[in-house]
Image (cartoon, rainbow, N blue to C red; front, top):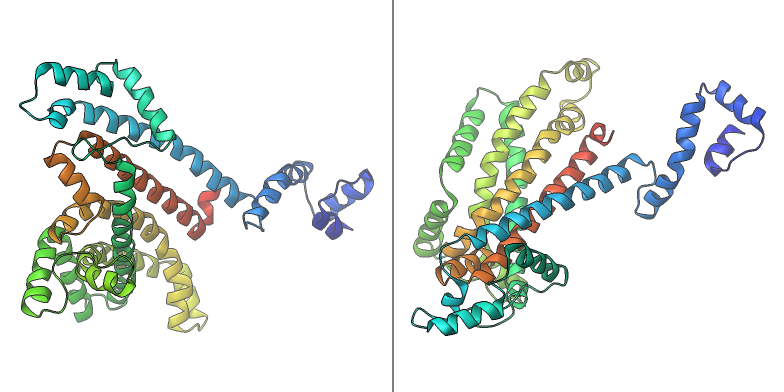
Length: 367
């Protein structure tokens, strides 16, 4: 009877039967009421694939709601930062030799003479409609230019993160297992070198070695967007540049986390039970060590967005980073503001995904 009631989720009018179920399974009335209240959350969660409970679904919804004010705050900062930059957008669009009357007329047309609060409300309204304005230099819609450049930046960032994870976690675990031995010393030197070298400097070294001396990979360009092989071939050096920087950080963190976990009592207990070292490391130790790794990997992935700016300039790749640098040099404030908005949304999305993965790896944060 209890199992059928629990599986069906139906309300019973038989008070004695329901009370008997509570007594038999030691379920308090408060717990039974909480279970009935959570059924709507559980039903909605099943629609999105969360079949076992409501905690994960509510955790994701909560993180989504918290991301909205964060994104709004970042957009507000971007709006006011662009407004305090030196120079006048109207003068940048018309040139330094334009007449004062022409500059004033363009400022009125662009709405720059309106109060800041009016400009801010108009800015948010345009964002909601997907209108990013037009470039002050070529007059083309900024949205179309971003739509062309964004895939190159996303591809570079994703491949770099994959390289950092694939190389960093095994290297960190391996050095932790061989602590204070030769593999540990070599791994620590490699990670320290990667942390010390800036991304643009490492990119120049890779160009000198693989593009000029060995002539294995191209030094500049992004390849044919319609040819996957050409994209990967031209992406090799830029992705390796950012991937090695991230590998160094993940290696140090994975080593520290793994050393801390290997000292725990439950690891010694698993070994005392006769479990193989592979099961102890992969099933018990590594899972616990992934919690801080996942948390900080998201932070470093957001940092790669900033490193991609100079990397795209060094390798002369199209992307948001090169687009932003060109907008600064040409004083194209509309394009600069739009690119900064996309970068801000990108970082907020990465942090949101990190929070969700953190909840998957460590279910305790869902409570």
